[in-house]
Image (cartoon, rainbow, N blue to C red; front, top):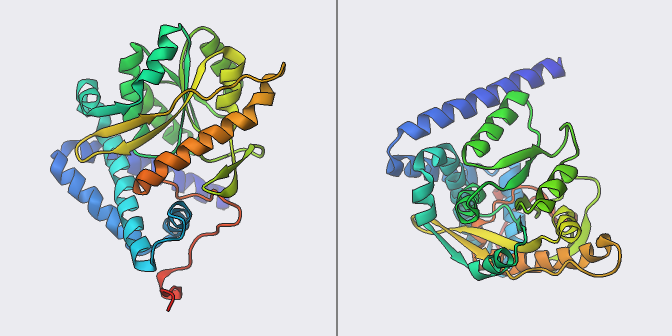
Length: 314
């Protein structure tokens, strides 16, 4: 029974995304933005588990300095930002690369230019912040060709294929995290060794392993693949944080993270990933509402209680 229920829920999710993609593209942009703003407000007020986890994560990011009402307001803005990501995801292929590139400002692009001038590939390590798909469109334009990324294999398969087709329509090369004909790390290694570049989301560890880091002053784990791939292939590793502007996007590119040290490339990974975590800490703290982290990051930070169970301290 549960298997049948999962199939039905999966089909419903796929149908819902398909309908959303069609309907939102038909709306005028201001109407779509207003609709998704209201959806973000509604989700924040509903206080589901993901929203309460986001709220707890934002408390860590802001160092516990906000009152309960201030944290509520930050969470509402964060859910509006998250809703904007989805609104743009539905509409991005129709916006066109020229508009996305023109609407994107990049801080620190000189760090990428140095790597390109040296003939090296580039690995961008990103958190779930702003619109990383729009960032990918800018990166493809800057590279003059595709980059490679990894996608979590969603269920049902039709939904995974829909997201795969969407990202490939933007010009990305996508390999599945699991279930592909070859391990994703092998495919990425070959791509980078041939001078290609890659983008990887690394602020949440989805596997059983991970590299221990201090992130906003607390113990966390991050996948170490980005650092390992850079160490093995000679690519330049850069933390990049995406943020929204009023009518466009901003990318903050951090300087190259060194990935050398010892005969074994694995020796450099812990130090490199700590540097990535430090860069994320700096940039996310500058605009925390654009960090869309509705999952658990820190083992000792559970989801917040519902509003009815909370009170501002006396």
